[in-house]
Structure formats: C-alpha cells, structure tokens
Image (cartoon, rainbow, N blue to C red; front, side, top):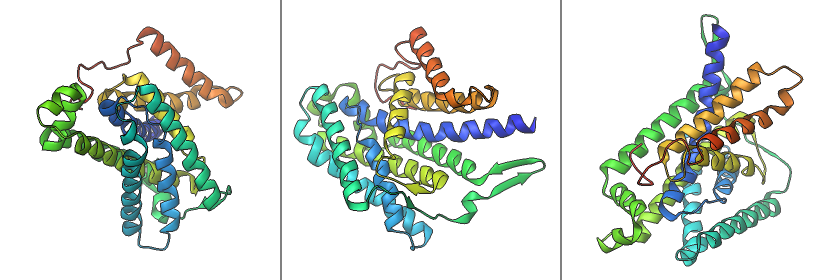
Length: 294
C-alpha cells in the first residue's frame, strides 16, 4: 500500500507539471488559434533568470523570474505575433518556430552550451515522512502550485472583466470586437498569463533537475502540445486532463514495465496516446467555446 500511495503521489506531481505546461499552450491557442512553439523558450528564459538572480533571497528570486518571463512573453506578442495577427494560422506557427530557434541560439551565444547549475533552497529536496511513507516536498509543491494556478485562472476567467472578455473573444473574436472587446488587451493578458504558467513550470523543472541549458524548453513544449491535443484543442479543462493523463501514464509504465523494457517507456506512453486519439480523435473534452470555465 505504501508503494501504491508513493507512486500515486509521483504520478500526480508529474501530471501537475504537465498540466501547467499544457495550460500555457492551450490558453494562447484558445485566443489566437496559435500553437505557440516559442512557449518552450519562455521556460528557458525562466531557467536563466533563476541562474542570473542567484544570490537574492528566494522569494525575490522567484518573483524576479516570474516578472522577467512575463516581460519576455509580452515582448513576443508585441514583436513577433502582433504584426502577423491576421495571417494564416500556418504562418503564425512558422513564426513561433522561428522565434523559438532564434531564442535558443541567442541563449547558446550568450550563456554557452554548458549546463548552468541553479541552486535552490535545500528544503525542496527534503521528504515529508508520514509513517513508512516518504513524500518529496517538491512533489507536494508541484501539486499545490498547479492547483492554485488552475483555481486562480478559473476565477480570473469567470469573475473579472478581462477574463470574461477573453472567453468572449475565444468564442467569436470578430463579434467580441464589435461589442467593444479590445483585441490588444485580451491577447496581451493571455500572453502574460502564459508567462506566469511558463515561469512556474520552469521553476519546478529547475528544482527537479538543478540545471538550465539553451535546449531545455524543447521537450516540455512537445509534451504540452501532446497534452493539449489529447485533451481537445481549445479546452483548458482538456489541457489539464491531457497533462494529468500523460503524467500518470509515465509513472505507471515506469512501475509496471519489466526492467528490460523501461528504456522504451516513452514509446509505450505515446502508443497509448495514439490509441486514445484513434478512439477519440476530437480529444477528451470538446467545448463549444475555447475558454469555458475550468
């Protein structure tokens, strides 16, 4: 029973991280119909921000990281995507790829290709001991962070003026603009929120791995895309479900697969993903509006 509980906590922790990654991608897609590949580079920005701000008190280090990532997210919207706002979605997608590769190579030039160590508080690596159960503090932090951000986002979308405008824009952007919704305000708010989600995910990833590299954003953004597609394009609830499903599958297969097959765990994970999409190609959640309440 202890092993079952331990594995369940690990699955929930990893699924929570994947859900945060997927939410950042799903939010921008809901507003702009853009699968933003550059979201992964915001995670890289967060990692290097933690490294640059090392030495500050932890709360200031985290706050500074979040603010820097938000600033980069808004700069991306203003410089890379606003001039192409009325372009074909394929053009926007290519633009996001170009921005991602540009930012990755800039990081490589500025910081070099070697991994940078980012020390974080030692208590994050501690365990909570409950009887014979040892729960990593970082797992608890991951679950709490995801829950708080998800609840906050749900409240923001349903109880604030900008949030309601975002839901209206996702339903029908043209009609929403005729009713007085300001496109710039709504889209910048979406990018700012995606920046918060990316910064949080970056902090959790750095806390797990301890290092930052120019290419560290590629794998997380691919996971986010897969989770969004599994959950149903445009659905925030679906993005959460997709992220949780991927996290649970990864941990469960790591546990049940024989040692000889564990190196191929990801192949089994994506095999299950293909099965899910074959049985339900529209995703787990299909919403009339891209931003219904989560």
